[in-house]
Length: 234
Image (cartoon, rainbow, N blue to C red; front, top):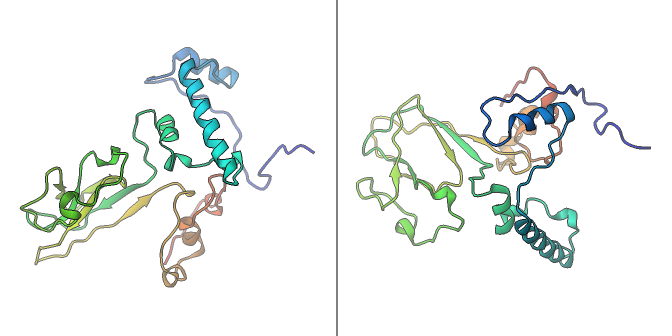
């Protein structure tokens, strides 16, 4: 018997909501209308013929290597992490970020206090940082920072939003009248995340919190989304 509902126990809203056609940048008004009325857009050329053929040859080679290694063709998932060609296809020259960090600051960072260091633009590099750069990764003098290294100095109440791919570190905290206090909020897909908290901490978390920080496949739907009110306790 054919499966007509893959998630029969999940109350889903299957109503179609038409896409709004405001501030268009790529698709046309006509294409949006076709999508809303017909449910699909075709044709929509993304790669010219020569590029499409090159992509096919590239994936034929990757799949053959996967088969030779004992995988199946369905195992070629998340390989953009390891294969430059796949990464280039999915990002199309743009930044791909699946790990974002928010730092709400609870204390001021003044000149010569120390704190967060970043290398602007480093999230776009496609290579590991050579170990010898930036004094072998050890930067301790706020008055003698290596070229390209920036010391960020937020005030209490400020947020810093950072791509985790940015090369970053922290200076020793030198202020004597207050401690460096921030909140660290990490956001990433559930299939990429997963808690590295020690078991003693995990045992203190509520079931909802443990589920929230646990790793899951991208097609899994966590129970937490079925609740209108969520209590996250420790």
